[in-house]
Amino acid sequence: MVKSLCKYRRAEIADQFATIIKIVSEPKFICATCTRVASDKDYLCKPSRLTNTASSTAATLTPIVPSIVTLVASAAPAPDMINVHYLPMPTAVEQRRIERVIIAEQTDELEQSERLLEQTDKLKKLAKKKNKLLKKAAKVVKKFDKQLRKTKQTLELIS
Image 1 (tube, rainbow, N blue to C red):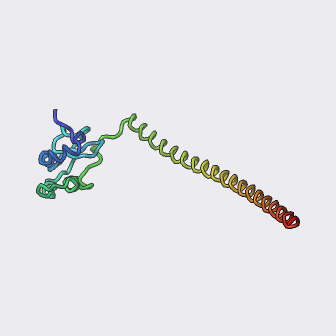
Image 2 (image 1 turned 135 degrees about the vertical axis):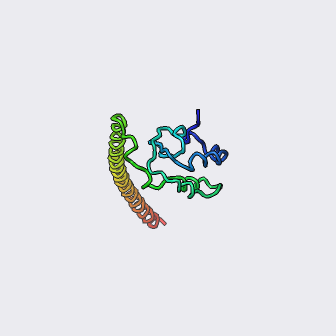
Image 3 (image 1 turned 90 degrees about the vertical axis):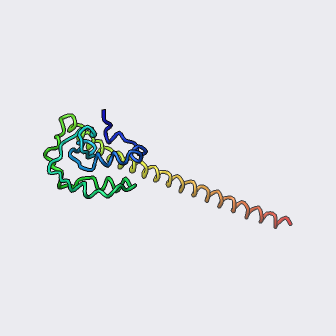
């Protein structure tokens, strides 16, 4: 069985660079889930046939360049080359998953705003408590100063 493109690890991509160039140089298929392209459907998870594929994509590939980014950028077909109508429509299960993801994202946003409100409430309480403690400390200092003055007055009377 042929290894699918999405199964390659980074180290394997660097090692098998020439093979990968052959696989993606003339794309005829696109994966419906991971959007990778290949010349044979065996290299993809869920292959769909590309329509209007031009052999000009192979011409845009630079000669073997050690940069994988260059390979991916030049091998990917232009958006107008992919006919979306031939991509499989999501099944009912996939559609429900998409809806669940959207709902989960919305609830995450609500939870984040609720957490922010809770944090601001806690910060307000802490600030109030700090002010109360500062007032109490100021009162104690004032009381200490008053007692110190009285002590100095009594000592001056005695000496």
